[in-house]
Length: 317
Image (cartoon, rainbow, N blue to C red; front, side, top):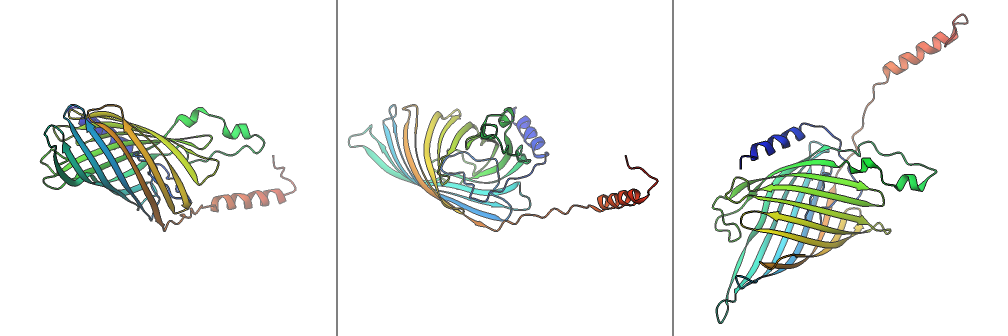
């Protein structure tokens, strides 16, 4: 826990940098994966991301089995700056829990928020601010890997977990705990995008959670389809795991997307097998801001040069 102040100082230093957000003409959704991209949705854009999920868990040591049906949501809004986004996220679970250590097995139901956060993210660095000029004579030059592709866009996230009393999925008594993250995003030639998250969650509680998520997405030749694979690692005193996900998304129109995924983990304490389908849509009120350039000095210089060139005894070098 002594490292916590250093992490917070690092995040505040990153927040002091300035960048330029990259608004996209089509919806920019974090679904169907679990990682968060570095870019905000854009100023005056309201976006909703919703899903239905099912998960089956079996614990070989405790002889337990759970069947979870859940609803997930994320409400994202960009305001004040292109780089800033506030978001409200949650996953509500209806769980059927079975303990097979009795004959007949003991069974009961739980339901509550498995995840419930409100926070904000800010894009602090964008290497794609200056777009690459295309080479009109070479397809290879436009699509080959360059070392600067390894420099990611960087966002920081700060938020709070909000849980109500007697939540069966949260052992702590306190209902509010902090969550911080660093969000990285790389774009590679060939329509590949790599998103990496480092997350430090509930670090004021007795059992803080440190995790990472790495998501690789590829847009197919048909630009309305994309596929992804994802790896997540979770580490805490109470639970540690490695999780894999994969799925696809389909763009219905520039403001509407549907998606699906499947996933599993690598251990049997408990084993996890799950799937989800979802939809993302946005209300786009974004307007490009006009940049007014003061060219008065340029015009004055141009007039001086014209006047100078009219004098027959002065040679302009």
